[in-house]
Length: 396
Image (tube, rainbow, N blue to C red):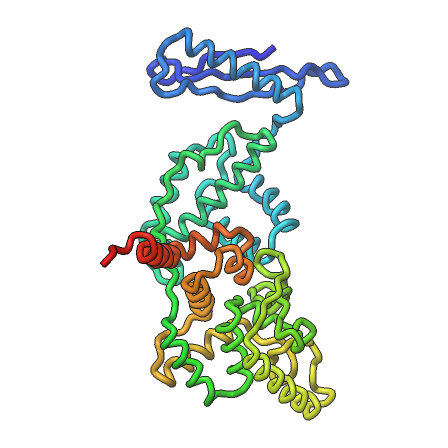
């Protein structure tokens, strides 16, 4: 049976109870270290009967968890447990995600890494978030960290404590009641059709390879890494279709490397015939380059390569588009903006959200709905107008 003992503050006021569950003795007859936790009296609860009732309920549940092996006697520091958490993520998550987690953990461990998991509360986390919002935290600019970056730290801490709760190491997740700064949601920006037309006209004066890369982004809404990771084996010229099954990425640790798409799902995208004809023309051009290079050519199978045949750096798209937009006095071109443009056009033309989500490679259509809520609202307004014209139009 669980044993409870009151805990008092400096003024002698009971603020909680220590709950212990004894584990018996080892093979040598020595008493094993008991399971132990603390139950704090909820704020505002003053009736002694109610306090005792809730304490007894907690003690019974805690004892049951101990018997079922859900509780550990080992009190780990945050740093130690976070490292264990990372081993789980390295098994399940993409390299880019794990690498980002490790970047975030540098600041987190410096702040709360030395503390025991069971000692960390929401006040510690809130102080940390306030600190991240002060000047000097951004090592590159010397400024504060953005609310979005602080929210990333919060989500990681939340995930680590969730895992600890599953394993019975902590009873509550302090990140659940912590208050990171609110992140203002930005509307996805997109190009007007007239701007896209102008971009495509300017592309006619550019090298064939870059025309194909840019037009594929415009025509498919695929991510830049998915276009750079496209291989000839995934291009079907008979069906005017490409298969998105690779994602070319870069990290300081691994350099340029190939991964699966963001959602780990393969998708097929139909492509405008004129773009596919241009891509076929570029394939012939690449074949001539391969013959010219001879043994110096590295056959990687990628559609878009360096002069040697090796994969291109994913950032090269962004760099080239920056120069291209300045050259022709075009608005700033972010590769992802083509993706937003495609979504806005499809939604505006009445294509259902599930089809749009599938084409863009969103695992859940709700993701598409959230990102393009403003576009959906505009489409709904148009739908309402059309309905009004048919059903509620005043008779002459």
